[in-house]
Image (cartoon, rainbow, N blue to C red; front, side, top):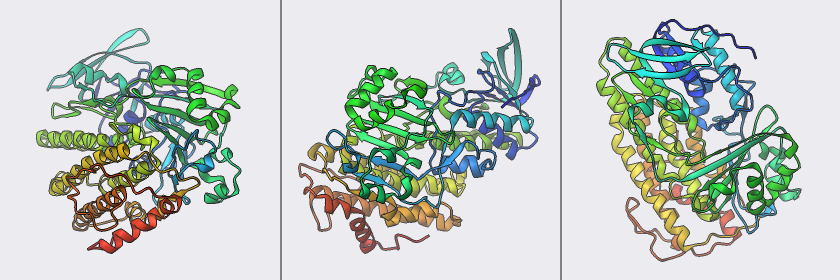
Length: 559
C-alpha cells in the first residue's frame, strides 16, 4: 500500500511522538472528539511498514477489540487485518507433553457474544496510518527526535528528517514511541518491577494448525470443525507458556514467554535455540513447526519486557501512552486494553484543556487511576509463572482472573465509566475490595501449588462457557446498564468473587462443608488437595455453578 504524506505545519495543538498502534489510534480518537484540533505525528520508521512487523501485539481481548472496532469505529477499515478468534485456549502440561489429547484443555467451543480479534500487526499499523492520512492528520515518517523542550507557553520538539533539522511547537506532547520512551526517559519517569520474564517470537508463512496435532476422534469432537486454530492457543508448562496466534494473512505467530530464573534467555534468544528448547518442552509443537522452517519470516527476542512508570499524565500538558508508559505481561493480551484506557484519558484531558478548563485535578486522578490499574493487575503475573506447570491450580487461577477482568475493568470500560471521574470515585471502595481480595487470592494460588503438584487429568476438557456466571459476565459487557445498576452490578460481582474464594479454598483443602475463612485474609496452611480424579475435574464447572447459585443472595446470572 502506497502512503503519501505531507510535512506538517510548524505549529500543532498536539504532537504525537510515534506513529504506530498507540499513536495513530490516539490521533484518530482526538479528531473524533475534537474535530478542529491540529494533530501532528512524528514517526521514526519509513513507510510502509512491513506486514510481518517484529512487534508483538497481535492478540486482543474484549476491551482492546472494542476500542479499535467500536470506539474508533474502524471495524470496516480493519477487516483485512483482523481475524475473529475463538477466545483464549490453554493446554496444560502432562509428562512430556505428548500426545496433546492427554493434556488438560481449557477453552471455548463457540464464538462468544462479545468478539475479540487477532491482528496482523504490521498490516494493521499500515491501515491506521492510511486512515490518519485520509483524515488529513499530519503524519511525518523518517523522523528522529533530537530534543523536547517543555514549556507552559508551548512545547518545542526538534527532529531530523532528510538530513535537515526542523522544529514543531505544540500545546500538548504525547509520547507514543513504544519502548524507546523518548519523553519518559527525558523526564526520568522510568520504573522497573520485579517481574523478570523474557520472550522470543517468530512468524511462519504457513497456517500451522493446532488441530493437526492429534487425529484422536474424541479430541477432535470436543471442538468441531477443527476450530481450535482460531483461538489464541497457549501451551503451558512450569515457568513458561508458548503462544500460537493465527493471522488473517495465512501466517502464524509463535512465541515463547518464560520466567528468567527457570528458563534463562540464552536458551531461546536465537531461532535454533528456541527450536531446541521447544523440542525439550513442547516436542509435538516443535515437530509441527520444523516441517515449515523454510517459511520463517522473522525472529525476535525481548528481555525483561515488563516495566512500570512513575507518571503517565500531567497537567503540564504531556502524556505517555502504550508501551512508552508501561507494560504488564502478554499472557492475557492486555496491551491493547491499556492503550484504549490511556488514549481515552488523554483525549478527555486535551478536550477539557482546549475548552479552557483547569485540568490539574483530572490529570492527577487519571494518573492515579491508570497506575493503580497497572499495580492491581501485576499480581496476576508476578511470581505466578511457576504455577503454569500445575494444571489444576492454573485452571482455578484462569477462572478467577477472567472473573476479575470481566467483572470490573472490562465492565466499566464498555460502559464508558473509566474516564468518568465522579463515577469512579463513587465505586472506589468496591474496586478497592476486589483488588485487595485479588492480591490475597494470587498468594493463595502460590501456596496451593507448593503443597500440591497438580492433578494429572488425561483427556479432560473444561469448557469456559459452561461456567455460568463467567458466560453471563462476558455477555453483559454488551449491555447498557444505568449508573445505579452498574454500581449494584459491581458490588454483586464482588460478592460473587467472595463466594468463589470459599469454593476454591474448599477444593484446595478437601473441605466439602462451608469453609470458615475470611476471603480477604486467609492462608492455605499445610493441608493439601484431596486428590481429584479425571471425573471430578471434568465436573469442576458444574460443581462451581451449583455452589454459587446455592449460596448467592442475588441471582448470579442476571444482567
